[in-house]
Image 1: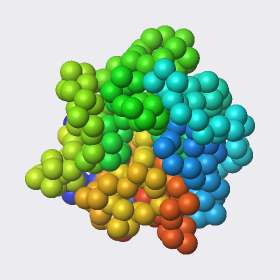
Image 2: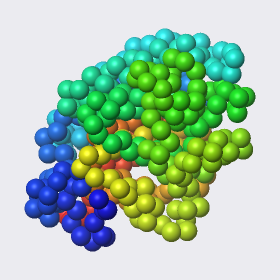
Image 3: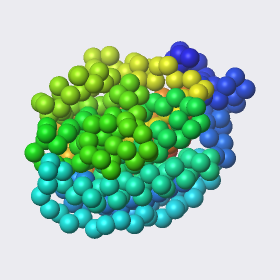
Image 4: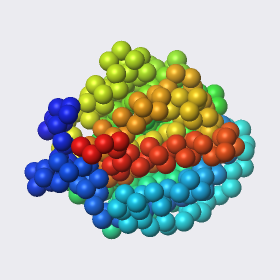
Length: 335
């Protein structure tokens, strides 16, 4: 089902025709209603190249994420933080840094996210670094398989995260989650959901890409990933890019958003470990989130790579919360 044309009040694509009347009175009314969301803190930087992302969940809480979602009409349950091994901060072994610890954290994420989905709640994973998306998206893919739903993953990021142990000398697994989810990676990560691969390249839509390692570029091409990089955004604008990224979504689609905060330009979001200049500005990012909200299909969310050690007075966490509000229906005008 194609998205409605611009300017037309959008009935939630994933909610069927019965929601059209509510949509004409504003997106907030129809997107989530009294839906319950669960906050799952995952305080670790086990897969990252810099320390500090472990503080991300608390920074988001300090920025009043729960309270602001409640104002959107949502019931919010904060599950607290998952527990896992400490970061030993060791060099890579056999191409991977901290593999055992990464597996342990992602196993915990998988279990927690899957439980929330089974209970009919929308899980929001508060990272933590982006390696944790292996666990969250493996759980979502398993849920989609069990429920007969089609999966679409929007990967909002400066990086494609399709590295392998052979392609990167660092061994940092936060650069490998998409490859692992597509079955390229170590045992313990590629098989979290009981099947390999957890999902396939065609479910992913990259948005905001602007930093890809040379060998990784070839891997992305060979996998036929759909990449909407910053040049594409510059050439045609965020509106058309999001129309392309969201094309084909229908009422049987589970839309998962994996929001790496380094998706944003570092001039507005300095609090990340891997800043890359030339990312979306505030209005481009808001439009991206608003168009995702317009579909009414988002059913799970990651917020990752927020690093308070590099932030200024928690401004990046506050911006991330502001954008997440837009994902749940906040807009400038009633539409």
